[in-house]
Length: 195
Image 1 (cartoon, rainbow, N blue to C red):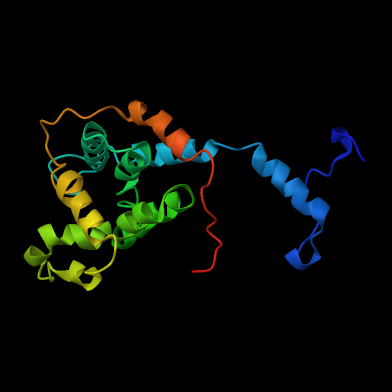
Image 2 (cartoon, rainbow, N blue to C red):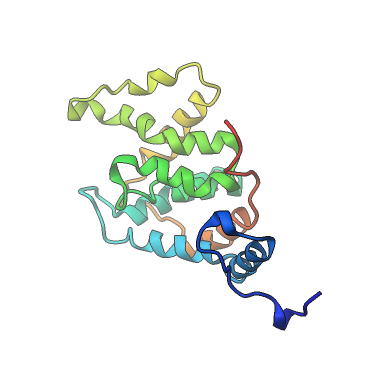
């Protein structure tokens, strides 16, 4: 067996159909060297929400911090709190599908219930304002009967719809970083499973 100095450092294929075990081991080693950096990148993206008010009374980062702080103070577990923090991370990159973006980022690390809540919260949050935009505020009713319907409705009611308060004292982003690292340290489930 070759020692570490002799190990292949990069894949040699130009098409995946030509790949070998050694190629994939080299790719795996390269990825391992950056383990945990995804949390730093997500934190950087969250910081981009600062200053973007989108017409709201607080900026998007403050809204996220308020949502997560409320969930934390209510005794929710770390996974739920991290979901609350990242629920609107897609607002500036993918406004039309922001809920799906947050859900996709966290999918490998969270329960199916929390994933469904994140993915659908945009439609459920619409209950509070869609009618002002000429949309059906009851659009969430299409999911009535789903096991997570009330779970998602509760998230929006208790933590999301009321987190636009300029006077609210939210926890700083740094307080949530250790939670993010613990929740996102190791995937709980594969994103490649059959549905």
